[in-house]
Length: 143
Image (cartoon, rainbow, N blue to C red):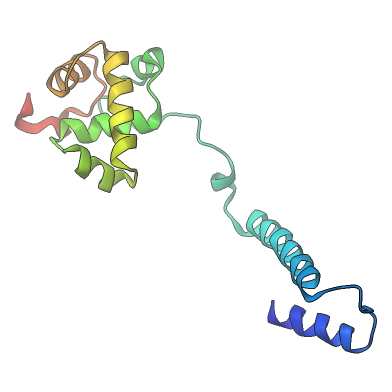
């Protein structure tokens, strides 16, 4: 970027850009150019798996009934939240573990309560166990 700026100022020195271009316009053009260069390099250097949204559920079977997950319309993120819930994690702990805000965690839990037709966390844990939505090894002594 520094090289490009030096190059542009050198062009101005040779009066290729006459006085109508202000410094702000030149900097704006450089910014736009570097934005597109960044997008181009991200597309080239990022792994192909990062560009495609993973629509499939994990193939490894941990005792989770993925057919039931799809029937209930539970998203991958909601499944992660319910996994943390059965471990006994608080909203704050779930948020920190999944790198989401507490508000988002509460929204996911609220959506899960509706989808599981339960009213509270305890019922959600029991219901998710009944429906095989969680890995039984994660439940431990909670059930």
